Image 1: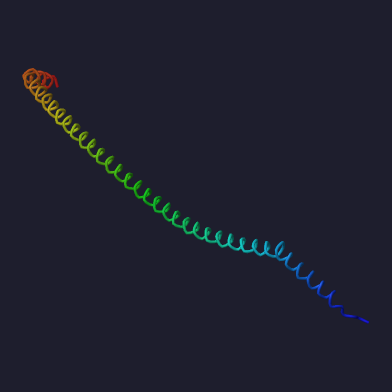
Image 2: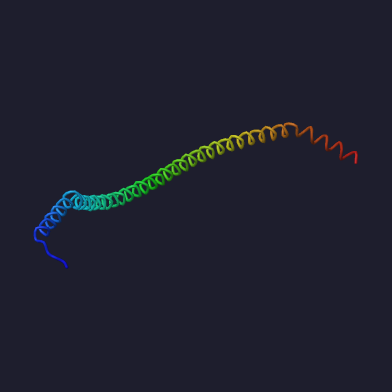
Length: 140
């Protein structure tokens, strides 16, 4: 039946161990090294991603702060411009009121002069008017 041949068993054992050594050097070690390098690369990438996400969060917060500051500054500039415009408008209104009051006073003085002149003219012609009225009343 089956016979065990020790020399053949030693040769098979040597070939098996040689094959294991050869496969370990040419296949398993490079495969294990590749998987280790891949794990290291993945860990570095994850660390970089977490760092970038924290950086992006801080940059987003900074951008939001800058935008809020810009909005606040724009609001202050707008309010200042409105105050300046209102002040300028108030000055123009006051100047126009003063000018109109001056013109009104001049007009009133001129009107008073004309009234006095008209009164003087009527008084100077009063005797003539009286005679004309007497003449008309006598005709009636």
